[in-house]
Structures are given as structure tokens and as C-alpha cells.
Amino acid sequence: MKRFTALLGACLLFASCSSQQKKPDPNQTDAPPPKLLAPSVRKIWIPAQLKDGGQEWEAGHYLYRIDRNTSWSR
Image (cartoon, rainbow, N blue to C red):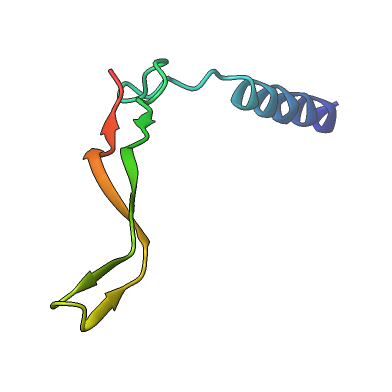
């Protein structure tokens, strides 16, 4: 009988400890984090050209210009 009472008490203690609800973290909110907006970049073609009175040849190439940097959404 004593074993049964001790076993029953241990089971009730274990069940009460495992079923307690944990308190929510006050620093955690349900709102999703803000998202990053992609930067605005322009791709500009620079045509081939002669420089220095025809002594240098610069091949055509792309120039990438950043108009707006990455930013956080609101």
C-alpha cells in the first residue's frame, strides 16, 4: 500500500510538472520582422571608343549605377 501511494504521488508530481504552461517571453512579439527591399540598379551600356587621339581603344562595357541602396520595408 505504501508503494502504491508513493508511486501514485510520484506520477501526480511528474504529471503536474510536465503540464505546466510556460510563460511567454515579453520581448517576443507576434509581428513578423521587416523585410529588406532590393536595391535599384541601372545597367548602362558604354559603347566602344577611341581615346588619346586614336592611340587607345576602350572596348564597350556595362556600367552599373546604384540609384537606391537596400533599405528596410515599413
